[in-house]
Figure 1: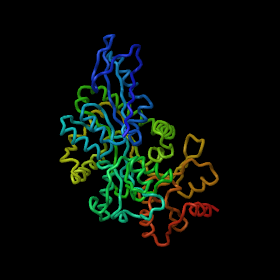
Figure 2 (figure 1 turned 90 degrees about the vertical axis):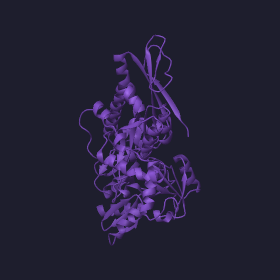
Figure 3 (figure 1 turned 90 degrees about the horizontal axis):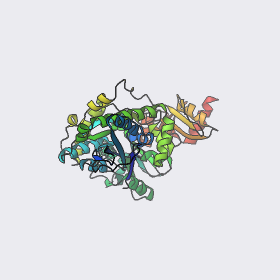
Figure 4 (figure 1 turned 45 degrees about the horizontal axis):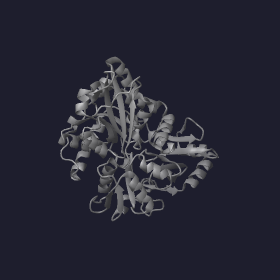
Length: 450
């Protein structure tokens, strides 16, 4: 795992020594005080960008702290630490070395449990991105794989990151398919990048991972979706956690962070293409993949609010982690603290996510076009210089790349699906419907218009 540390000292005439501890203070040569705030984030877990990659690139947190510093005469420095998963962020938080972190729902529970156990209690204070059906996690296989459903994973090797949201999806999905996650599959605990390489090399049969790995691998032609996490119909999300001691001692700084996060959320929602381009530049991810998740109709919905349905889902996650012996009892109600967000951010919240729609991104365009049906999208894409075309799964609503989707012709209508299993579910319930290739779907869409 590679960690990148980026320190930003707010513009001042004289540089001062850094604080020796997170949220700590040091006296500078001019007698002023410097406070260092350390933020742990996951640059490539792109539904955390409003508390990480995008927020850092926009500089909103530093702006908020600069305004505070002008009032209280304190110099604030922000240190950004980048990790691949939530586990090392929790390790650093419980060691008192990270003040604020962002991670997925399952890691958040481990964060709560470890914090209490090690005497460094933490609190969940905001959400970054969520999907109410669970579409942020996906199981993928290699292109051309004979595996068509989760039932086919019996006796196979599956890579995941144990304790992650993607692992939680895998465990639940296997159980619903009648498989024992510990006995019927050979689960390998690997970092996302290691698992992706293992899938490409053929040393594992499938990979269960969180955003943006499945979309990235599919976009690059290195994977095919096997299981759409939205089939579970259970909310999944990422959120912001803070050390309780820091929240108490630096309540104003936490308020600044949450205000900055809200500003970054506004930016992403009003300028989704620009935000996707920024995140792509910062992370090296394809902008088309970032937009799949973070776009105007993307898989993730961004809203800092601690929605009741998300907290309810968090409580349902506890037994899964307990069964895996990763946590004991977790008092979710004590872990969740809505007070800082209410204090820092006033005003109306965001509406719930609207139903996904087909979307076309043409080369050289700073905006996208939306379409009411997949047929309209396919017709508009013909002959155009397409950067990316997206269609929602007709069963789950999960957005996917049109050229990677499984297409079904049902009379004059076309339906798109993330996985063969979703397409089969639809075909089995609609006599006469049949699976067709992407090229055939394009021809059928053109014929319907003539």
